[in-house]
Image (tube, rainbow, N blue to C red; front, side, top):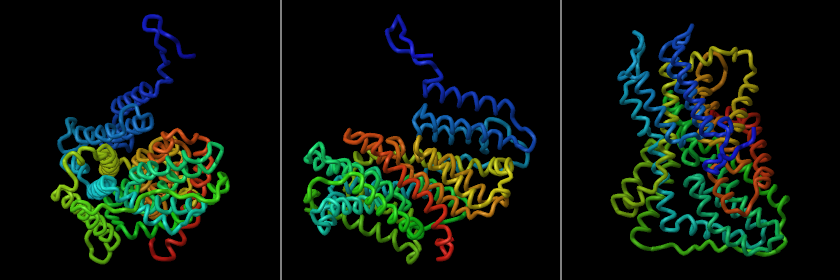
Length: 478
C-alpha cells in the first residue's frame, strides 16, 4: 500500500508498518507485554523471563531507534531495578539472589565509563586548543607532497589519533582540514573522494587499537570485567594494533588504486604552531602523562580507568576544561555504554544467559564456525544499525556463551571478536559515527563508502576470525 495524502492536513500519511518509530515501539511493547504475561515456563525462571522481556524490548528499540539509543539504555536500567532487583515492585521467587538496586545504578559509574569519560575530556580539550590539528601537522611533514604519500600520512595520523582520542572527534577534526583541500582540486579529480574517504576509514580502523578508541571496545571490556576478566590498556593494544596496521595498508592501497590522483604534488595545511598559554601547557602535560600512564599500566599497576580519570580532575581544577566544556561532552554515549553494561549484568544475574545457551546444541558446532557466525552477525548488524547498539546486544550473550561449558571458546576471544567486528562495519553512512560525519560533507556517495568499506570490513573479519587467534595464542595473549 503506497503512502497516502490526508485531505484534512495535506500531509503524507505513512502506513504504520513502514514507520520505523511506530514499528519499533509497537514491537517493543508487544514483546514486553507478551513475555511478561507468559511468565515462567519450563526451565525459564521468573527473573530470567522478566529479563527476557527487557532484553527483547531493548533489541527492538535499539534496532529501530524508535527512541534515542541512550534512552533505551536508561530504560534497561530502570526496568531491571523495578523487576529483578532487591527493590523490585513485583515479587521474586525465594532463593533468587537479587542484585541490589545500588549495583544496577552503579553501572552508570562503571570503571569503563570513567575510562571513556577521561578520553572524552582529553579529546574535547585537545580540540579546544588545537592540539589534534597541530600534532597532525607536525607528523605529516615527513610524508612529503606526493599525493600517495600525503594520503598515507593522513591515514596514519588519523588512525593514531583515533586510538587515544575518540574516532568520532578525530574524524570531525580531520574533516575540517581535508575538506578545503579537496575543494581546491578539480571536480573531475577522483583523488578528492580518496582524501575524504580516507578519514573515516582510518578513524574506524584506528578505533580498534585501544579501549578508548570506540564504544564497542568499552562495552566488551565492561562485560569481561564483570566476569573478573580484566584486560589492561597495553594488552588490548597488543591484540588490536597489528590488525589495524594490516587493514590500514589495505585501505590505503584500495583508495589509491580506485581513486588515482591527476596531480603530482600537493600539501595539507594542518598547522603545527602549538599554543603556549598556561592552559595549553597544562593540557599538553596532562595528555602526555595520561597516554604514558595507559601504555605503562603493566609496570605501575594503576588501572587504566583510574589513569583516565586523573586528567578530568586536573583539567577541571585548573580551569583548562570549564563547566561549559563539560556540558558539551557526549554524555549520551556514556549512558549508552552504561546501559549495555547493565544489560550484560542483568542477563547474567537473572540466569537468562544460562537459559539462552541451553536453547541450542552449541557444542555440536565447530568452534571456528561459531567464531565466524558470532563475528559475522556483529558485522552485519553494525552495518545497518549503530555499532554501539550491536555491541550492547551481542556482547552479553556471546561472552556468556563462551563462559558456559557448552562450547570451547575463550570468553576474551569472544569479546574481542564482537568488539572488533562491530568497528569493522563501515560500508554505510549509518554504520559508524565517523562514516556519518564524512557523509554529511556531501562530497561522497554511499556507493563510494560501500566499495571500500565492504572490502576492508570483510578482510578484517577474516583476519580476526581465522588468522589472528592462533597468533594470539602462540604469543601467550590467549
